[in-house]
Length: 391
Image (cartoon, rainbow, N blue to C red):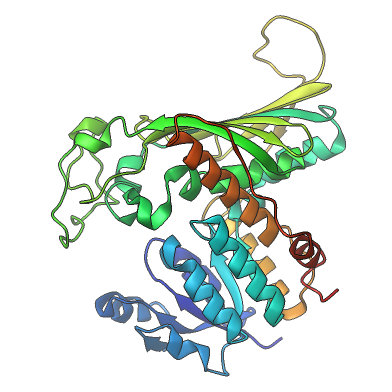
């Protein structure tokens, strides 16, 4: 099997994904890389095998030696870059979230359908062992029919990961109920078997808004993702623009009647997700995503509180980024580029997670007023659900 030749746009925080995509002799090779920072570009090139280098992604679009392009640039650039790549006939891997607006997502989907170019959105949590274990439990019927899903997300590194660079600027992200929560909202939809139709949310910039900021144009401090301050109020050198919320809660009604809730805090002492799914005949819970992680199921009762579940499923061990999910999702993407067809990830689902997060952010900034999620064109749904085949 000849290696696919891949171009990579953006060599920042998701560099490890690009390195994982470079598999000479094993199906794929990173043949071209692009970054707007010439120093970063030169330094990162040493990690690959003599790739073509450019600071302008448009130089990749006319190259006939590239089979696909992986886009890992900041979120607000996704629409423009993805549309250009699709128009040029390049299969696209688009790092999540798809874009920072519903309109931007829909434009990407329309372009992919019109051009017939393959589009893949990297919601890697669908390839995490813990998420797949929860989904298998639900599909087997161990807890009956899902009725409600609750997710709590404690983000201990939030002040460093999201408030020291462009993530803190709503013009670049809309807000962290979109940028950060899009992953979990997609999982909620996948586990519950439906998409959000109505949301309301509340939140605030409770802590990081008053902390010391860098002047515009000042680079991030050395070691900013290796050295962390505690308590959160001791953090400094934050981005010069901070207007996204650092704590938020949202409620959702899905199209199949499921009620869901999501909570996010960026100044907790630990980093962990807590998933709870309650069905008509039981509930499952996962608290954590590390080695030896388990998903517990309670499906007998009624009783008082029991710390010991009726069934406990051990999450399979995995190696690599995001609990092995990065390798899994790249494998699926490479298969999709070669063969097409339906994938576990879904551009429709990616759009719906952005739409839920976007409308929740609008609700949050409107005093918690409920907002409806704009539906997606049924023709686009059918096209992507059918494996991106003309119908």
